[in-house]
Figure (tube, rainbow, N blue to C red):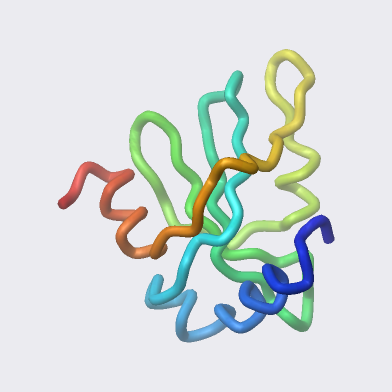
Length: 105
């Protein structure tokens, strides 16, 4: 994993009911500037660290998704570039971000 131990611990703790209700924070953002989509990770399965819960967002909105971390890291755009961590991203409540990305207030 490429996260700090503190971030990993938080993402593990979010797994389950918190993640299901979006009652946690998106801790990490991966972005694909050429592909036009972002992935906001808010939980990791502590028993299978490849399984993540995240918001996938593009210009049409966002969806909640369980996804493979390895698949995320191996996804590339038309230029052959992989998504990168947005180091400027600051954690935000998943439920608020979901509503905002979908044009809700």
